[in-house]
Image (cartoon, rainbow, N blue to C red; front, side):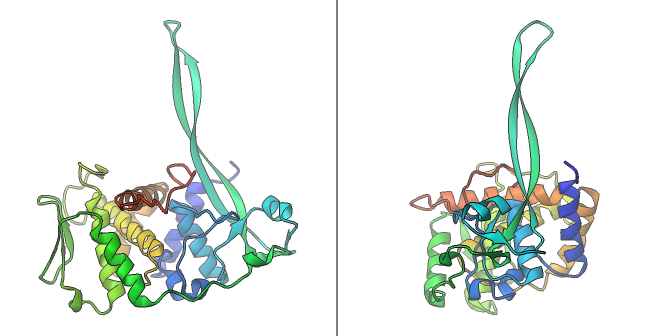
Length: 304
């Protein structure tokens, strides 16, 4: 590739964090879809996943786009439309593996999987003229808040996790495999409660009986801790988008940002890894629903 996709994306996330901005939360304060929170969508309505969600959310905030739809120059042309002159596209990535057969010294053949990543450019439909009308149509009103939160209750209840309430701290205990939450009424608003619960339940997925996620954490505040917290933060953001919840950034983000910056500056692939782990966690939680309504599933590879 002509450009280092990993470094370009990482630099953008770092720049946002250094300004104190959480790219993955900003669309909730930017009137995205007139208040409806959704993941970025391809031209066919299929949602993007992982790192592409962060990249396109960030692009939407920067440019002020309200539509979640994105497509390539070629896709727009196939729909009889054209990109407005002078518009610049945004980078998204596709990750997968190719299988290569290699002959061994003993004459046998062995298949080896080689990971690859490529970048391509997409445009928001607000940058495109002549598309079918449904791409420009505004969404129906957001469902009643009480219904939306009832839906969140149902989602989290279906997980079968050991969730206990009481005290003033929210955390996941690996030793006892339970999530501890302050009482619902102690939060400043319902959305903050569910966002916090989503964060802790993303941690819950790291247990060896589930996704067995381990970053070599040895003590509080080390690099492994920062990586896991970043995964939980992104996982909660993805889940809140899926569940149409609209939380505000918590007061503890400032401290986390510094540890995240250190990790991202030392490893240009860290944000890709965190987004991939977060997507797997969200997919795992969706898979525990009665109908296994994996809303996040698509054909993207591990890091996309």
